[in-house]
Length: 603
Ligand SMILES: Nc1ncnc2c1ncn2[C@@H]1O[C@H](COP(=O)(O)OP(=O)(O)OP(=O)(O)O)[C@@H](O)[C@H]1O
Image (cartoon, rainbow, N blue to C red; front, side):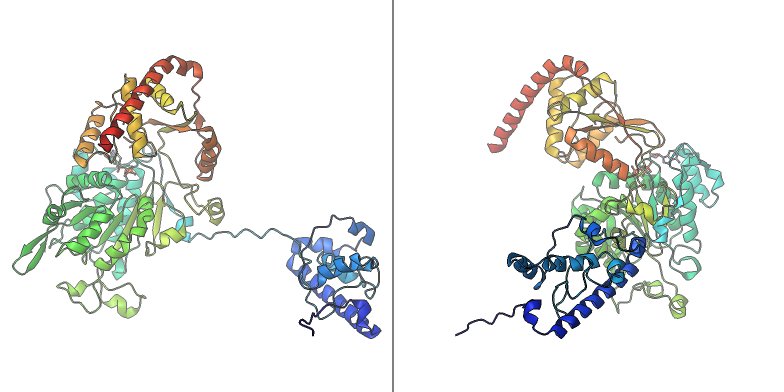
């Protein structure tokens, strides 16, 4: 009894009828011609080749044959036929689809590609689906398309010593604030301030409650190097916008990734809100939640009273207050500043932004005291929607390395954003192609006063090179970044054991109070090895220590980021040699210190 019925391609010899073979050959030819025409249409560059008369079949067969996988009966059948000692026709039939793939040659040659009539060129039957005959071709590269606001930013001079604008040349700034700026030694605006402050003030021209012309103002993004004065670029207009507010409500929220940065920004706000009714609260977790709550809200007989106009926060603690501080409301929020925006975008998984946005917009159906200006969820602009003005929520992004990745930026839900950038001007979508993953290629800019070198070294000699740079090059203030808390601790112990350099450790091993003190001592010059360099037009040097295996990748990364070539700084062994005995002794001391610490931890 037959268990299986195998449907096998019988081959031309088994087809029996001559007429059948004829029909199949014609159908095959038609299909070949059709495919050739299609390819000719699709591949423009190959048209020329296709237009040339087909060369002698022998010549074409000299082309190296690529192994080809076929499905269905094609390849296995032809192989089997060859094994059966069938004539050369079998071989040519195998080639037929491949040749047809070349283009119009096959179409022009009314027979098999080797010159024989089609009926001799045995191939799969007409009803068989022909697969293969494809040429491997490079898929055209997808050109990312940058939205116009990203591709064509308002360009700002990155060198803070150039294009300074005297304070009196920006008359929009309130005279009291101008006075305060002068009192703090600021006589001119840095370029980023001269561009951003008037733009922001313009967006509040009708008072801060309503956008210009009743419309929601554009969100603003600023990409400028570290130390270029971005903080004052938002502090001045925000303080000015809130100067004449009647009721204390949280109207400005500044979110930063670390406690130290938040503290620095709140200090600047304190300077410019001094002698005004405005209050600034810092919520970063440096104090207990209860202590922070006391700076945000006060319980009254009929509810809560807001105590802060401006809140400077780290995202985690901010969400804690949204969840746990009764009476803490963001429903009158007018400005949301996202400083160090790139780092903040990277922390988006913490969902702090959706929480802020949810807190800023009242839930459907709720009426507040300020229902006249109650904000509604953004919707399509219609004549009716513009009739009753509502308080806009404007997002302001500041970063030294603003991402160019539209997907990342999309998470921020920006409204008709406008970009101010010190990066390359007028980048088109082509430039974006150079970006490995759509990041900030060509946009990252170092401060003009910064000289950046790279120092090739081995893993073992790395700490020695650091010490050599500090000691031999007479650097008075050095900040050394390591990749972990543990490494910074060991480098600290090693430098201490080595001697000759006043060193401090600055990491999360220490509490906020201790870190503040370390920074103060560093500012005062009491600590040599811990600040950011080349800020506010000052000069500075940066050294990146690279292992051999990191060198190529690092340099390529910089090139992709549009950073000009770095200078290589070699440390010849004859310079390091005299330090080696001291270094070996310090290493032994480090080993002992680490063992001792481990023992203490285990006890
Ligand atoms: N117009 C100005 N004239 C003189 N000094 C200024 C001016 N604007 C800012 N500064 C000073 O420049 C320094 C750097 O400014 P700021 O901290 O605002 O830079 P930044 O761009 O925010 O840097 P980062 O991205 O590192 O936070 C500060 O010490 C600040 O006081």
